[in-house]
Length: 486
Image (cartoon, rainbow, N blue to C red; front, top):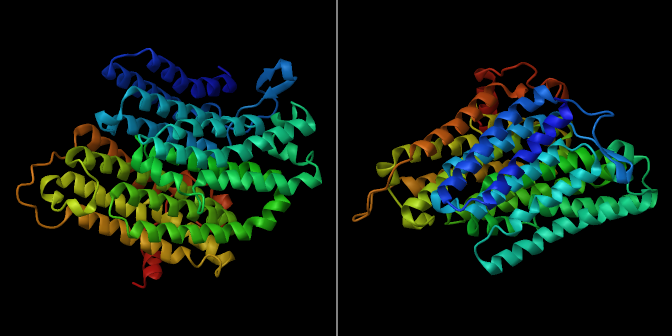
């Protein structure tokens, strides 16, 4: 089997599962079909970097009526992202409560997975942007409240129309074959007068999908009022980051160099703003949503200000955030399914009734805030070294941002699980086996990848940092102590 055919099967498999769900009328059967499809997709995604890795040169799928070739392949970030996209889809399907797993939600989740896999496998500009646009469709329908859905669609339209307009401009200038070129090949063909406008369109669309302030309002609405969880949101955030680093930068290098400091300031300010909003929330879902807003700003600042080290740190932070926050959001769903609310003021003493849930929430929270020995600590350390080393004043808001995010997660654990047990409160069921094993798998992944960070980032991209296959706990502790004054 050729690598091109293998990747096409990988991308199409979730789409086939979504089609099968449309003819399934039994909820149990629909869940089995979706879970089986996601499991098979995960197996293929793990094998993809070994079977079909590498950047394509002349192979691909021919498009005769356009006299063009649709190239597929994987670069280093794509090879790391594909298994994680499939894994987050699988654990979301397994651990989500039954009431959040009706057929429409399962179909939207599989469609988003297919579009995301296609985005990371595509090599040319046109299919990447088309897949990027397609990823927004499930989000636009992912809310229970009509008024909230309209607000989400407005913001997602703001992030989609600029990208669609760039496609029209590229096709109009160079003919239908032009968008089938790689960003490096297309860069030499762009008219000089178009470059600034194209850069502005790209950045508006990416910032809107990244939920960077002031384009952030759609993300809390989707997470608090819709059935789609952090996994789907993370796919959109990761795709936006990849579009910025692997399309915009090589396509418009001069314009990117001019606008990068301003983007870094925007990202750092957005990170601090999201952290402040997360700190004052009394609802667990809204707290997680604004923490994601803060993390999005952190990623943008790392890419724009950090150079090679910040770029690698931003990608590691993106992976760490996706794993940790998916686990936390699954636990929040479990709490809501058992208690009927996610209000932090309405619950105390859950640790006596659900100790496994409390311990898992605490451990995932520690991983999310960057505890030594986890992937979050490596990514935060790398991101801070890059941004503060290159632009210490511009990146200064990142330090209080990380501290505020840590305080937010610790307070959430304290208010949700600690304290006396209220009288007359009915017993709460602890984590079910499927919830326990999926969250445990995410915890193990965070710890193992923290012990072996070079498996996720090539050492050559960050000279002198994490050049071995493991980082000693002693050096971790020294960096941890120097950061917090221990």
